[in-house]
Image 1: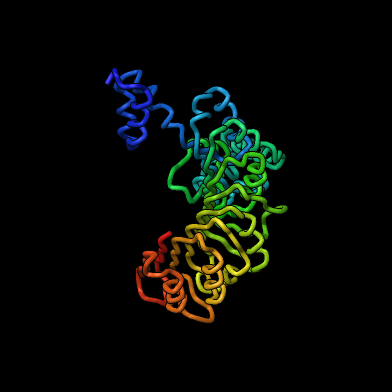
Image 2 (image 1 turned 90 degrees about the vertical axis):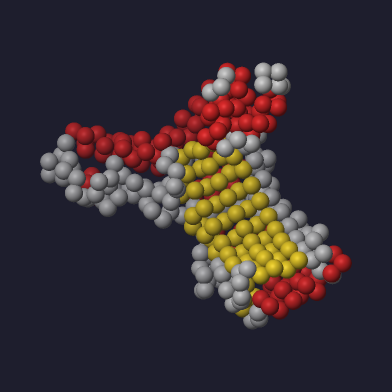
Length: 345
């Protein structure tokens, strides 16, 4: 083991699960050094002014970790703005309204918690749009960004836990990702090396400030998209002009605006996944015909307007000749529209 080059040891460490990687690094200093970059390939931050400031300080003090980071998860949330009386009785107060250290018998702890909460809200309200670009500038090899709501996360962030204990108030449960998306896309215009963007939580193009320019994104995954205007929706989707993979889950299962597939064009698109929402047969067939690079189509819970998925998939079979090795598989019967279509390239 001691004779193996460090590069080989690093490749071995890259294949290990996290628990095994920790044990691997405990063997010797050399193995610890070989496995350290793997631990910092995925970094996480909470989207607050204080956490961004701490994150920048961490990157300055850990240059190796900054160079190794390839994925960044940003946990976002919004907090209620309220007076002292409202803060004391707010449903999101940790411990609920029955706490004995708030209300008439105010304790010094409650006084300090409210002062910390007030300072936190004031600082969040005065944040500069340049905070995030400054932080991203310290990650030269960043390739992927994921946006995740704080309250919906299964992984409790230490920064978030410390903040809750300090201000005694939690963020809203169902937050919109649109404000954070605005900040992230604005910041990424200067960092086009990021090719993958994953947005968890509700997003509405109406709530995104300014025009969206995201030609650098090649892989896009959105888990809850809602929009009542097909033109606004098509402009938002068209801003990601270089997509190779798109996974789109609509917020509305049966109702809502139909996905305007006939109004978008992604010349490099290879994989399309649609969940929930609605599409028309005409737009779906037109989309398939215009996207010659499309090799995989997955749909689930997506209703068809003015036609049937059987006829769409029939056209898909005609498009791919048997000699090309086309494969069409169905996960269940329609009209649930749970299917998987694959074309050999």
